[in-house]
Image: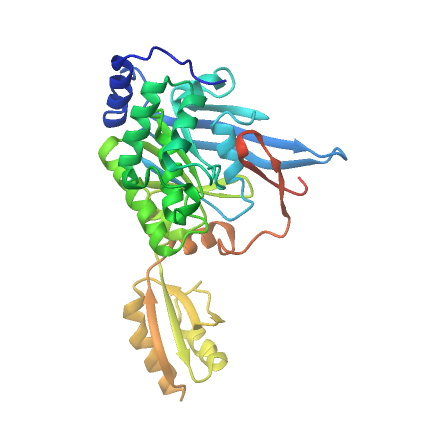
Amino acid sequence: MQPPAGDDAPAQASVLTAALTNPNATHSATDPAYAISTRGLVKTYTGPDGTATHAVRGLDLDVFQGEAFAFLGPNGAGKSTTIALLCALARPTAGQATVAGADVLSRPEQVRRRVGMLFQHSALDPDLTAEQNLHIHARLYGMRRRLARLRTTETLDMVGLADRRRSPVRTLSGGMRRRLELARGLLHAPQVLFLDEPTTGLDPHARAQVWDHLRALRDRHGSTLFVTTHYLEEAEHCDRLAIIDDGRRVAQGTPHALKAAIGDDRVALRTGDDAAARQVVRRIAPPGAVVTVDEDGVCLRVPDGSAWIPRLCAALEAHGIAVHAATATPPTLDDVFFHHTGRSIHTARPDRTPAAPVAGGATAETETGP
């Protein structure tokens, strides 16, 4: 169900423009502090053979108004399914969710009016111009012609594509197309903007450009951004993040706090005999420290890793083992993911398979078996 067309009057244009520059302009003071809040959210699919597959399992989330929130997880973790539920494009099997002050079960139409969405895969018409793509989307969203033209001009300028407004989409670079899709999601000045893997397939320069515009959107206009990603460096751009794995939230907090909770630095020693070096390091490592050998050499986690390096190097040299390189690095978000799940974020689960697409173009990610 699309939003009502409304009157083609300057006052309506002013309201939408004010909503873009002041997110509180069109919302009451009684709106909740959370832009998104879920409790026990579940999505289960039943296959043709009657087997239940679980995409989301009892998800609890709280996203503050005006923050950039990352939903971090590997492919198949349940990220896209969660977005479909929060945008009222799929119906939860169980649990509750409120988005932009509206319940996704009892008021799905209001949820859809109040959110914007950038899907993983492009829905732009490559033969139409950037301006035409946005104008058609605005009209489909119920805007009168005059307001559609105004919002098209405003959003193209916001994402830095005003000079390419008459260029066919097929002539735009990948980064420009992604920014055009971002403009489309902003046409109706949504309270919450969902971005599902916003930079997948882009080169590093184009990804940086997209994130520059997202940060400006949050900082200048107070927009709430909900970003799903499996790129660790993208999650670092966000105020807070939640890690999802196997349909469950396994951790939540600021990137700094989640890394600080691990505490220990990773020390890696590349030696002339890593197998022998591992035995030496195990004898002097702190109790409980796990010493492994991988492509980086002999590795372990210890507090204040840089202070441990001279001691470890001296012990190895005393045993006649040459040390070629030694590094100490603080925890990363991949370390956080490993700490909570037992594997790297880039290691896919073997028991996860994609489900059929859900309404609105999102993809439901499920697992095979309960």
